[in-house]
Length: 467
Image (tube, rainbow, N blue to C red; front, top):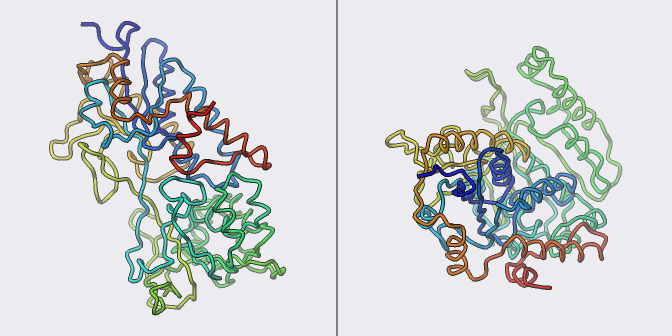
C-alpha cells in the first residue's frame, strides 16, 4: 500500500482549534514540497483566529494584522475550515480516527487560574479571561454583566493580559470608539463610574512581565494619571545586584521608566492608575450583600531561589486596600480533551516536543499531537506559536515518513465533510466566514472602526448565510 503523502493518497490531518498555533501548524504542513497534505481545521466557535480575535485588546489593531498570514494559509486548496463544530460534542476523537492519519490539538488555555484565597467568589470578583472575552465579543462571555458603577478596581497581575485590562478600563470613550471593541462593552464602559484602577504585582519592578512600550503607554493615557509609590520603586539589594550583573538594558530602561513615574505629579485627569509591587492578595472581603468592598494585601520581599531567580516571600506585614471590584489575571490553564491524557496540575496535555504520550506507559500515542498553550502552558505571545508549531510539525513529518500513523477506514475527504454536515447542519465553512468578515468590516467602516463584530452565535450564523 502507498504510504500517505502522495497526490493519490494525501496525508490527512485534523487540527482542533483555529487560533495562531493551529494556523501556524497548518501553514507548515501545507508548505511541504514533497508531501501532499490535506488539512481540516475544526473549531467549536463559528469564527476563526482564537486568541487574535478574542484575546488581543481592541486598541491593539496592528497585532491583529497577523490574520492576513492566516488568510493565505486558508486559501490553500487543501485547507478546509469546519467552524461551529465541537470535537467531543458533534464529533468524537473516535470519529476523527476514521478520517485522518494525524490529529493535532491546538485548543489553547480556556480557563483562568484562581488565586485560592478567602472571598474569591464574592460578587464583583471576576476572572480576566471573562472580562477580556466580554469586551472582545466572545459568544461565551457576551452576556456577563459587570458592575461598572463602582469607583475602585483592582487588577491582580502584571502580565500582558492584566496590563490590557487596566488600560481598557482607563481608556476614554472617544479612544474606544475607534476600535473593534464589542459595541455593548463600549457603551457600558462609557457609562462607567470607575475612577481608580490598581495593578498589583507580587514581585518587584525589575521582575515585571510587561514590556517597555506597554508601560510607557500606560504613562501616556489621555484619561488617566499614572501613580507609583516611591518606596516600591527602590530596588532591593538582590534586584540591584542582579541588574548590575546582567547588564540587561531593557530591564534597566523599564526600571528607569517606572521610577520616573513615581515622581510625576497628578495632572488632573479623570482617572488614576496605580501600580503596586511586592504585594499579594490574601483575602477579599465584602458587604452584607456579598459584594467585594476591599482586599487584604500581604507585603512581600524577594529571595534568591535555587535556580537563581528572585521569588517573593511574605514579610508578615499586611495592609487593606478598599476596592469594589477585583479582576484576577494570574494565569490560564487548559481543559481536558475527551479521550486524551491530561496533566491536571499543569493544565496541559502531556507531550514530548508535541507528541502526546501516555503518562502511565511513557509511550507516545500514535497519531496524536498538541501545539500551543495546551502543549507548553501559557507562555509567550502570538509569535511564540510559530517555532512551537515548527517543533510539533517536525514530529508529525518524522512519524509520517516512518509510517507511524493512524489507519483511517474512511480517508476520503468527502466522507469527513458528509459526517460533519450530518451531525452539525449549522457548519460554518471558510467561505461562510468570509461573508461574516466582509459584513463586520462594512459595518465598522460606516462607524469609523476596523470592524463591528457579531458576538452572538445566532448573529454570526445569519451573517454567514447572507448574500
